[in-house]
Image 1 (tube, rainbow, N blue to C red):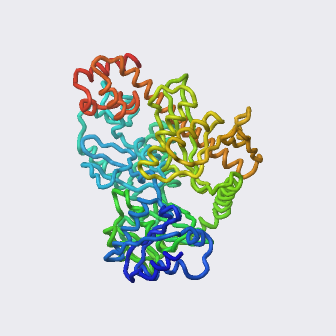
Image 2 (cartoon, rainbow, N blue to C red):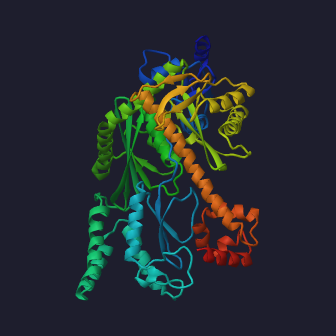
Image 3 (cartoon, helix red, strand yellow):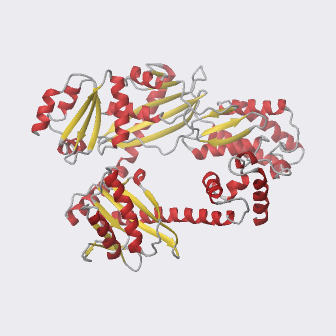
Length: 588
């Protein structure tokens, strides 16, 4: 603590970021401050509780970076959190961008659900969204495709497809289409996706009456079902706003040790979606909500025109960083939206609190129980499993659990490069590759390695770790004849029994099932690509290089079949394309 006291006395009263480190020099928390001296000093004054107490007890040193402004500190903090992935920071992760509905309106109007890349603009394409619920977005696209004869196929066929014969496509591949007709469809669909359902509803009612008059009751019933779908599912709560501005609304509610964040999406005067997030709170609530909003739009290709937030949020800072209006409404319908987000956040966290708390407590308790059982302080566990088919398509998988929770961003797949066929040599290769990289790239070491097997895998791990001069405990998850975990096995072959139905038993089962699932899924993927590779080997003109490029680009035979000549020509010549299509048709 002496070095901390010395550094505290030297802290400047300037804006910046601070990095808290443990006794292994690992960054465990990153924060920002308008006044570094006041903020950092506050950690070491007064009584702390909960995770803040745990954080402070693990601080062995700290560093700080002075910035020229609070905005600069804000942006630096976000980048430092991404870089170090600190244990005590809330990490706002989202593996995917939100889906949008894409309306292509060039020669052939087409609707599809897409996840657009940031800053990537497409010509003659309108995007509508976001739709946090991808299932809802797909349902809307399917419904509009039934109502309008849009282009359905990815590539043009040799003859009109089924969609043309049932009236759900105009036959763009063979017929000359009047542009006025497609322009009218694009206008109606655009109006609908902007929240005006009246035009389509009126059209469907006319079609239903016409079908009924022609005694086509089956068609009339189908249209009636579409009308019901619009009224029950798509017709969301109407917001009494006089504009058609796209806006998002944020609010939050703190309950015990958790923060609940609610995001409402208003499009064209309609409240179209809401999204809920709940995190364990171990830092300043305003820092959390500010960082959340910035992270929320990090991968977005289509920002709203306006954001509404509660009155304790720094609107100038957010507006400056995002480049859009950030407002605090004080009255009227906009204020009601912010209040609605608050009530939803409050209801959500209270509704789920017991479930979240129990699950969190069980994970933490199981991790503590495992630490006590093995006599080591466990923060990070890395577990391995292998899979192969009669010695072919051999792979390994590694899953990671941090403080009792799966850390999926740290999962790793290994395609076996050598000729290893048995578990011992498989583990030798995988452990060598994994922990050589841990050393070379200065990655975080695990506190425990678990193998999904017994003494053979343990000995293989220890042999490699010994050669690398790494001292990491290794245990095997021993299973009974019902393939359920019954004990942990140490390097001496001694079995440590696990009490069934205990939190630790369920925790180890969870790790075992997760590493098995992850590895098997990778194995299936490799096998399917191997099958595709063997089929492509039979086609003249497609060598190893072209085969690999085709597999990487199109993934499956279906993907290759549906690819256009233009797409294929980027990899193989025109004459080979004809050969490929002939072969695939014969194979089919």
